[in-house]
Image (cartoon, rainbow, N blue to C red; front, top):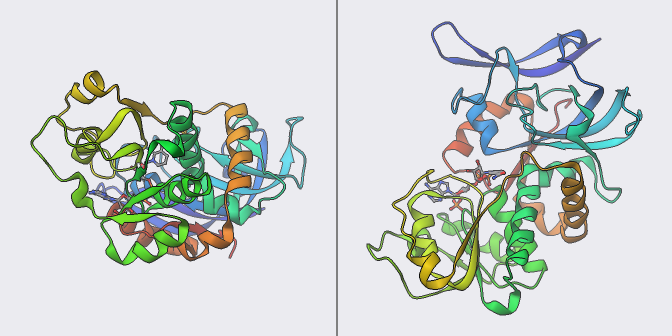
Length: 329
Ligand code: NDP
């Protein structure tokens, strides 16, 4: 039996080659569940992998794709049976282990969760790692005491995957959302997701100050870097910033002043190593809050062959919402 995959190889000159090809099923890595991949998502990390950046891949040739949804073909694990719909996010799949940019994936059962009944495999990947991460960030804000009554929430990188889904989820839960985007043309689509206001990146421009007037009760931050430093200076006393990503960088010139004078919390979110129960609970909550119809205009479907180009776009911050791929198309 053969399957189709986008194979990433490191060339002798150090460059990277991404080629759609057919492989024998026996080439798949070890694992106790064989899945027929119906849809794969596309994430920032996938962009890094296809460009050979970030040091994420251990061995070549490699198959990327950090998340996928599909149906079990074979399983030697009692929790999964042939035909069952499953979803996979994280656990270094698509990095250390072959991932979802293929019609077949063989994985460890512990990395899967059963797909919630109300969710199609396509919508599971419209959400994908971005949706799971957004849900974890929203849950964390609530756990830290940030309520809709406390004031607006800033979502940075709102035009991207995590940011756009965070905007939708927060709005559904009754929060006022200021969606920050460097793309003014996304103001309409972001308001359609439920953003109360759409603001430019200038709200987090360098200020040279240790504190600024307070503006937000909390934030979900995909961009990190210097803008995160400016964000912390504008959070209400007792507020919380859920730190998710590093689209603008992984470090900034930090000060403890927002923490010790305003009791601000900086909460880290890691979607990759979430245990089974936490993933199941987050997917259940996502299924009840997410509206595929509302999110429709933020989704693009592509083929395996188009993924390298999508990878270049995501690294430039130029992807709108989510990209999903049907490897068998
Ligand atoms: P996207 O590329 O879809 O979104 C990132 C968005 O950030 C862009 O669309 C853009 O939005 C904005 N942006 C890009 N560059 C800059 C910049 N230099 N300054 C300010 N804003 C910028 O990526 P994802 O949403 O999939 O992921 C977002 C981040 O979260 C990534 O860093 C990713 O690695 C990380 N991540 C972390 C996870 C975790 O478990 N912690 C899980 C998933 C992702 P706009 O144009 O609207 O401003």
